[in-house]
Length: 108
Image 1 (cartoon, rainbow, N blue to C red):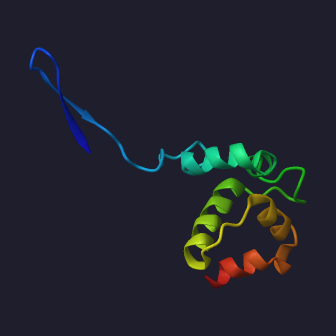
Image 2: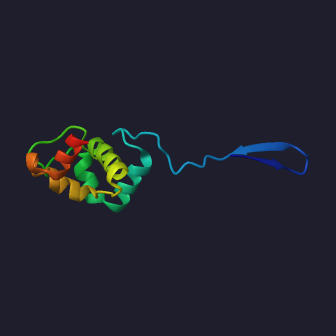
Image 3: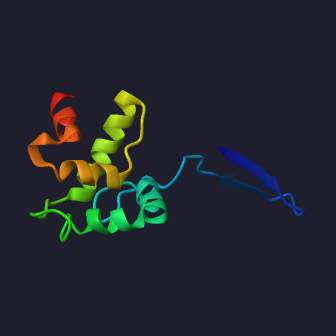
């Protein structure tokens, strides 16, 4: 959206506003900044676990765990219509092959 502003000397300035829902440029972990900010603000403890690839929480670290959660959360909310909080997802994938969300991800 562009807005034209005239000042007293009749100079015209155009100001362009970005009306997107947030900054979607990727972070260093490859997720969009709006999602990253939401996780850090609302789910900070789970965010730290995801950011560190599950170290100290899972038996074996999973590379790119934060990005995997982000992709899963987007896909699940698009298909199922619900948001899965990161702590719920972490507790579930800790079950290994018995994990509901891992099985759901494979099917979809």
